[in-house]
Length: 176
Image (cartoon, rainbow, N blue to C red; front, side, top):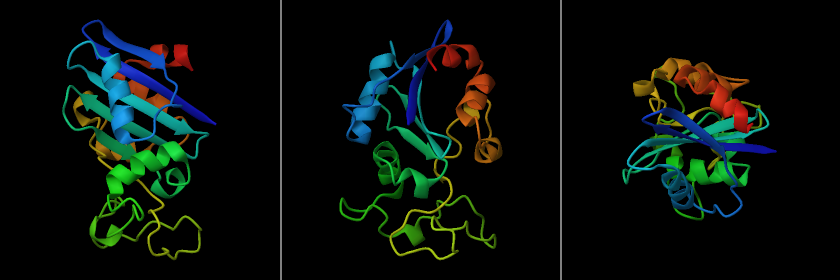
């Protein structure tokens, strides 16, 4: 089960709306959906969550390229909406979105830190598999008051905690 919502920053504060993702097939579709919720070049954040398994954020501002963060790429890559987000972050060709994954350093670890456990839990990272950890722009919300370490530490009610930190907790709960 998915939960998806849009938070649009306006001059009056944040406005939230739940959103249907039925017609979303690409990241461009998702970004267009977000831009439609903005009245100018305002910040819009798309929240997507799948039953506590993973969450993703897409941030658009005007016509700038969207910014993406996914809390657990391996779990997200197994779902249609998560795959849209992870494909953007991991790159590669259409047939192998995880191509050249080792060169990307997107697992959130520093040099010398242990790699996150793989999706199958045995510590091996099958060739071409998405990492079992966060990928994307972990600084996606820094200018809004949520630091990279704070974002990376979120687990259970991540979207609620993010909305609270942005001052939009009540508006998000209204659409949940």
